[in-house]
Image 1 (cartoon, rainbow, N blue to C red):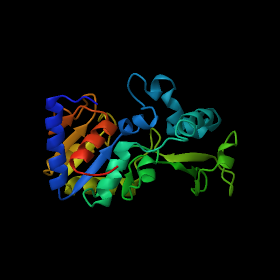
Image 2: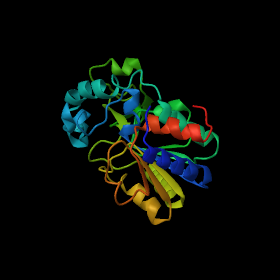
Image 3: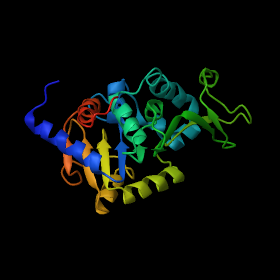
Amino acid sequence: MTVDKKVISLIEEVAGLIDNAGFAVAFTGAGISVESGIPSFRGEDGIWNRYDPKILEYDFFRYHPEQCWPVIKEIFYTHFTGATPNAAHRFLARLEELQKLRCVITQNIDGLHQKAGSREVYCFHGDSSALRCLKCDRVFEVTPALLSLPLPVCPECRGVLKPDFVFFGEGIPSEAYQASFEAASNCDLMLVIGTTGEVYPAAMLPDEARKNGARIIEINPQRSQFSSTTAHVHLPLKAGEAAELIAGLLSITL
């Protein structure tokens, strides 16, 4: 990997900030999982360029679940199957293990942070590994048997099952919302990795952290909503590339 001198200087700055932080948190978006083979939602190769977003509109799902479920299975339970954590996921898990990172706040629903070993993960938009009944509100783990049904239904009451992540028109899970904003308010360093800053209220978290005095490091190969106004440092690399370089400077084995 060839890295120019300016980027090397930024990597050294980022490594120093992480090493000296007292309360560091990470805020991640779809970009961190692209190197694991999971496509992002937005952008040139994003999922919404291939599928109609209405399949994730809560009201449309309620009235037309039989139309939504085949597409949901293809996007979330075919693309996600077999995906493994990349260097960026492993790096954050190692930082937590070394007590240099308090938590990960993620917009992702792919579970890769947990697979990498991160323990304190706030799933701001929910989790694809569970299904919730729209009738009785019971929650079930995703199984091949449930996904084999043309329309997954509750084993208890036969109500329609919905993936337990946030659809358009739904609110953010209250526990994840509260924990995420509390962490953003108290941290002194936030790593913003692979997120464009286009989805609210999640996009408010880096601004909340900066408002309370935190240094903001953005890792994203492209400039985003955060690059000019929120980030103190913008590292223009893919998440996995940046993780390997920073880990090397900190003598962290991934």
